[in-house]
Amino acid sequence: MSDLPAPPLRPGHPAVEEYHGVWSAASEDGPVAGQIEFQYSGIKHQADTALSGMWLFLATEVLFFGGLFLLYAVYRFADPGGIAEGSRHAEFAIGTANTFLLLTSSAVFAWGVGCAERGRNRALFHAALVTALIGVAFLLLKGWEWKKDLDDHLFPGPGFGITGPHRGGAELFWSFYFVGTGLHGLHMLVGIGLVAWIAWTVRSGRYSPRYLTRVEVVGLYWGFVDMVWLCLYPSIYLAGRLAS
Image 1 (cartoon, rainbow, N blue to C red):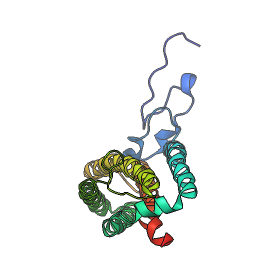
Image 2: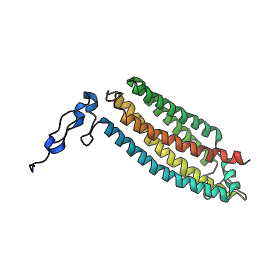
Image 3: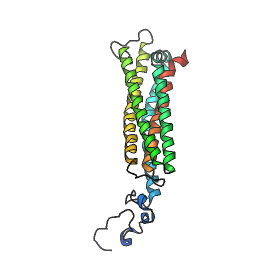
Image 4: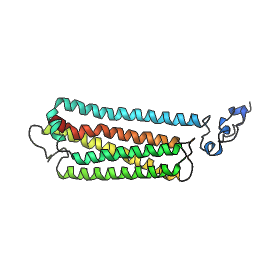
């Protein structure tokens, strides 16, 4: 074999078999082949790799948030009265409204993905746009809730607003609250950016029923963010009410 470097692979073009073997992307149609990176044998290989990578990333995120929820469970077992007392001061109405918003956003984006699978890219654009706007509304409500919490002196530390025998447990609860909702809010910001990116790129016509990998990957991430909130919601807003 020659010592010359192998010519680059290009989607939609056959490879020099001496170096690479047959480049199967050549059998894909034009719009799809244009999205295949050179290291993949075809669109299915590329899609499976991307989805597997996202699932692996989400598994690490589950471990990350799992440690936080495990710590909360230990504290709740050690001082159920203090955790319940802290939870009674949480803004139940705002938390419930935000839960409804996130569930709605996931349903809207899932509907958009289903439409894109049938070639309705315009519907995907509107679904992604609405999902991003709902995400912004969630963060605005959460910011307002944080302001109310700070005004009520619920931030752990000197001047903490809950006194009495359950103060220590209540402080631990509010530590979990600010850390948990803060981390979730950061993930929401990333998710909003990704969904807005889908809305932007779908207008360029780069997606088709045979190529929706990026949309599916973003949908998995958004669903994970939703799932984390569904774990936070009962831990924060229902702990005091279930204990009473």
